[in-house]
Length: 291
Image (cartoon, rainbow, N blue to C red; front, side, top):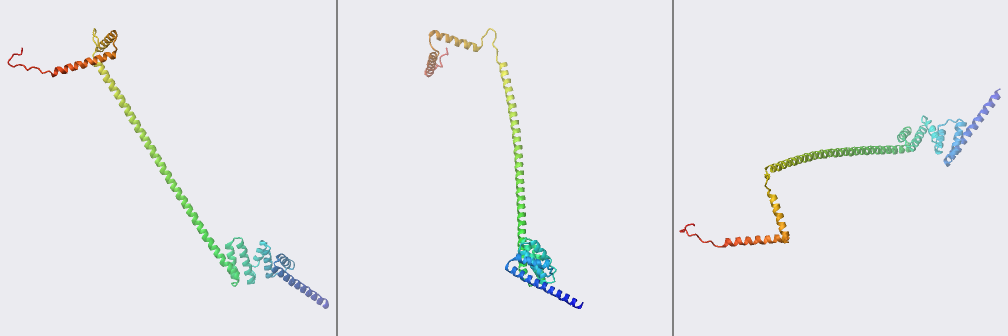
């Protein structure tokens, strides 16, 4: 029985030694593949160590997360890095936080990245990569804040300008409306004034017509009517003209020629009167009687 127990211990010891040897061999092969950039091979060996051999080692888990990161399996990388944030190793916690900050930066989650870099520095103040990334992230966030402020200011200025333009347009529209109303009122006043003037002129015209009719009627009333048995003066003149025309026709003298003869007679008569006015008259003797 004693010999059997000894053989069992030796067998277990040999088994542990073989496992240790296998673990060390896989670690070495995974590291060599990782350094060569063969991340797929390194990933498979780290997965075998963790999943098949159930190796619980924060350094192996960190290397596994790094392999996932380089093979662009971001989800698995984040899960493995996050599982190391409570690691007893300050270097492991700092490196895991640093890598989570890098992933957040690539996803443009800058505030989240800043928190991860801050935690990396708290875990290991000597982590220069985390310090550099932390300072860069503060600068980026500050620039973003300034840009946001500038955008807000520009947006506010644009809104103010739009409001100002709107107010100016409303004022202009109001002025145009007031001007149109004034023009309409002035036009109505002009129309009313023109209507009143036209009505006044029409009324004056009617009054003038009435006055003219009254004067004409008065003249007709004042004009003497010809008595019975007598001809009016106009009728006498008309008869005289008709008689003269008949005589001219008998004498075969045209009216134009007769008019010329009359003019000549008038001129002779005027000359005669003028000559008689020029002849001196004898003075009356005052001693003699008038007769």
